[in-house]
Length: 171
Image (tube, rainbow, N blue to C red; front, side):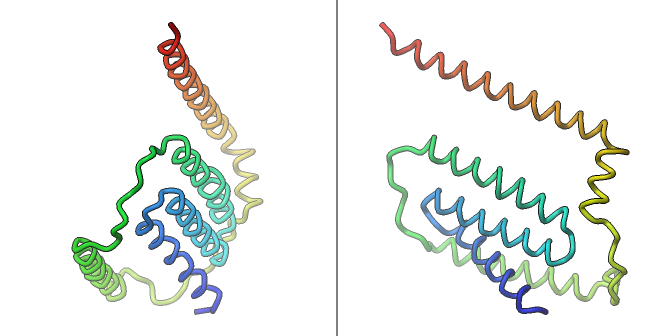
């Protein structure tokens, strides 16, 4: 294993553990973005450029920012409980370690796992882009229309709720 892989894996795991264990929701969302960035770096290191860049654009650029905005817009004034580790945490850590150990042993001892690496596929970002713009242009346009309709629907729902709030406060 290369040092870059080890460092990236440690950063990804650290971000995931922080996302689960921190009590401040904004900090949890930012730690989750760090975990997403680590996963994207792992994909890029493995040569899956399209998946790595999609991970960056979709998960870090959209989902993590959306979660941060949702938290900031909906958070209440109450402060969270300050206790971090309870007795349930230790049981959860023990069960997680047992499941990880059993799954790791099952995968490594399985005959379905090939012993030698297959040849690297020739899929690049350019090939995927060419296929999306030639062979799969109709499904791409349909997905774009469905996402646009969903965004317009979300805006209309938000406007209706805003109008209800404003109408209730007037005499």
